[in-house]
Image 1: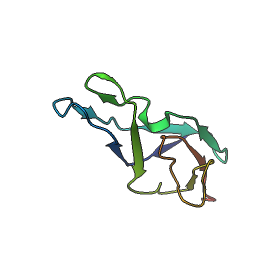
Image 2: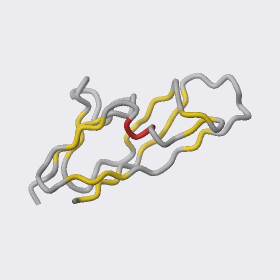
Image 3: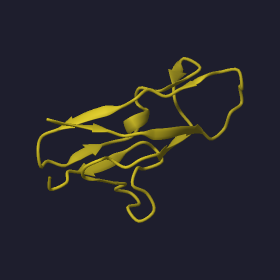
Image 4: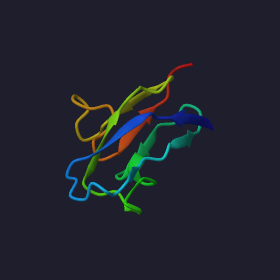
Amino acid sequence: MRPIALPVLLALLASSAAAQVLTGVDDSYGVPFADALVVEQPGVMSNDTYGGSPVSGATVTLVDPPLEGALECESDPVTYDLCPDGSFMYMPGSS
């Protein structure tokens, strides 16, 4: 399996309790050589928390693309590489 690391920025859209802590945890995925990977919502937010609870009402933004292959947001591939809801599709590169 080839590891995929995705640096992302987690942003909370509506913050009603400023004292709560938004905690983003690094994500990594394994994919067999030459296979596509589809990750559904909450995707990269599945292990993140806000005030100790699962994140809701947040969006993510891709910071850096993967070193190999390409990301695509299936619901809006023109605008996004990583969907704001954390879902994505990864297509491996040719190397």
